[in-house]
Amino acid sequence: MKSGKVYLVGAGPGDEGLLTVKASKLIQSADVIVYDYLVNEKLLSDCRNDCEKIYVGKEPHFHAKSQEEIEAILVKKAKQGMLVVRLKGGDPFIFGRGGEEATTLAKDKIDFEIVPGITAAIAAAAYAGIPLTHRDFSSSVCFLTGHENPDKHEFRVKFKTFAETGGTLCIYMGIGKIEPICQKLIDGGLPAKTPAAVVQWATLPTQKCVFSNLAKISSVVNHDGITSPAIIFVGEAAKKKKQLHWFDSKPLFGNRIVVTRRNEQSGELTKLLENNGAEVLELPLIKITKSCDAGIADEVFKEIGSYEWLIFTSTNGVKYFFDVFLEKFKDIRSIGFLKIAVIGASTGSELRKFHIWPDLVPKESSADALGKALIERESIDNIKILVITGNQNRDTLIKKLHDERAIVDTLQVYKTEKTDLKNHPAAKKFREEGADAITFASSSAVKSFIDQAASLQMNKEATKPKCFSIGKQTSDTMRKANIPIEAEAKKATLDALVSSLIENL
Image (cartoon, rainbow, N blue to C red; front, side, top):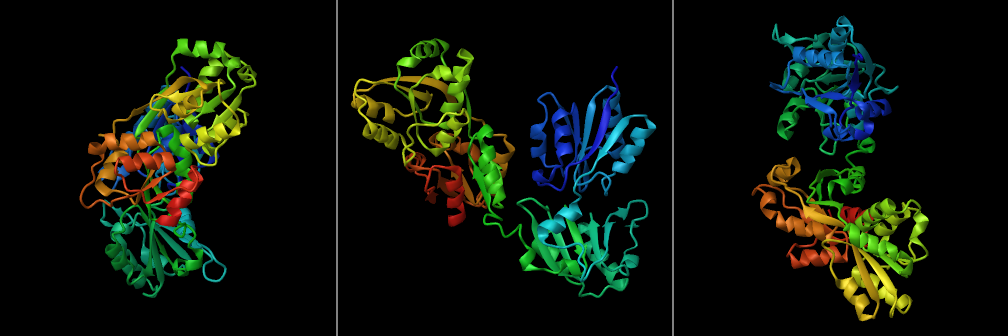
């Protein structure tokens, strides 16, 4: 049997963008991923469909697996010939017990590698605007653990001795014992007014930072409800400096925003929102799949050269039309010389992925505007037009074209269905905590939101979200459903939708 291998991989502090390139490639190729509580689960979305995922998280007062059990899993899977990724929050060799796991693997003659990650203290300091070193006030950095020795019920670290070192102290896993830790540092000679800071959930949109001094930081932590996971910083570097606070000054920081696009499409909007500091809650209200009658498609493609216009009313229409088209034809040039109209800029962008530029894009992204723009451009009396649709497309455009005596055929290439949110973790969080805003990027998402209202009923104490629309057609559907619209994007694009959120939250 082929021998396996274990990679002890640092997953970084939380922000998925801080994962190393090597770690990302290993996640994509792994047979087994053994991951911790502090690992951002979005990282697991890149693994293979057949990859086995084993959760061994260690939360305060709860361990899914003991350290011995974790090491046994690594050895067992490697001996079965598998490529095993042991994914650990931060860096595996900085308070990650990676040394213990590597020792066990070495003893069992298991091939292994260490893949470093960005450790929590470095990331938390950077995202909180705390320079760990500075030539004016800090020429050294100490990484310490705030854990007690379970056998002796005393701290593993003699904090008194580190009070004399100067520089910046970075204390991991000490939030539960912050008061005695600070007192021991004071007893060791550090002035009570020495700056101190705590950063919770570093690098994530839920990050919280508090600043004070050694004497008062524990009471500030308790008052603000700061809990694990958090890093404690002590020293002149921990002094609050507003000009260095880049992360929490992003325009949407502190806002939880619901994205209602389907899973495959939510990535772009989620990225835009997160880049602006928002916490994003993805509610995949709808799922869209290819759906095309093969017989009808064959009839349409036999006559493709006879159409003068091909019309796309959505990005999904573009994507799934070419899926169907390229199953029939090997060469994109088989589409012929017909002219192409699209409903808006986003649909045009999707079309350009196939290296085709639209001939007509209306200024306003709506079926009415598209029909009007086409009619104003030229006479469509007795010309053949092919409109690409889904199963829920409205007949507004088709009726408008028929009224102008055009010969209109339709080809359905996809279908939209609602998803079941009863047991979805994002839906659970929405019900319990609510959100600051909810975005609707299509009429079908609005309809699905209404259909699934029972599964999304929020608790009384949950934050009631403001509702944002991507464009006129979606807004019309929202009004018919009596959903109040806080704002409508100035253009039917994701960038414009995000700008609308920034302006109105």
